[in-house]
Image (cartoon, rainbow, N blue to C red; front, side):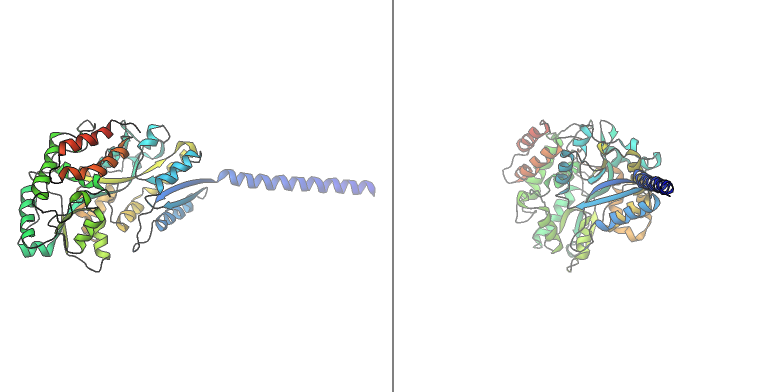
Length: 422
């Protein structure tokens, strides 16, 4: 009996050990097969339109349903917090797998990011609008995957233009003539010119491009003090500002938000503004009647349109190249590219989605923006010191068009920031 009992105990212990190992092995195997991707994204929502959490939740759940072995954990932050959150995680050695934000060059320059061709399928990488794909490159290698795009258009008040018997201008001379007529009618801001510190780098680039210049030359090098740029700022100073056609607030003191509000209030007849102003007008109880055209160029000829973009990047240190590539291929499907653009009055970043929206009348208000996609010029984001240059523009550019301002001296001063290193 004692011998039988010892045998039973031995068998029970063995069975128990076997069950325990088998159970652990199953759990370990399950954990090993599941990869968690961490994503940090930017919120595009406001008090009226739902924030971006819903979008990322939909993408994550749909992706996980198609790839049950990959879990997606996304955190969405306000636009002014994303960069600091990511920088802190990188410093802690916990860089996210994927980040969606407005810059990429600093991390790309340090070799911290996957190249686009290491992540995406050939079809996905080839789907981007060419001008945006090129803007995501550093030394001809793409690291930034365009996520959203926008452009600036000249908004005009249809009622004011109709009362004045005016048509939207296509040249600077026509714009000047229209502004004079509108001022004579008593319009407070015939054309608002927001060169205040909120986002002066955008307004400035739009006008420099319209004048045949820009922040960089054909080789991509900074060219702030070009004769075209100096001439443009002199024209703004001597023609629009000097005649009081830009309103009672000097451009250097007028922020974008105030200029857009003046337009929605019917106090500004023209303003250069992003596509998101359409959403603001639609959400407003004032419902100002408006039209949009490209910002007139000096001579009326076609010039590049000022554009902005946000980007998706993927960090190498997380080590999930294959899983990250699958997720990004999924994210850049036409369905989600179109959803993101439509919800927030942005432009799609792929040629297929762009073509589809251009043919769909429900997106007709975006057509002028869509037409500009192939001829957009963005900030020189591949320059790692662009953030310092942009800060210098915001701080100084308003002085160049003020009465008695010296455009060449101001541009030269800003140019010092182009020689700094990040």
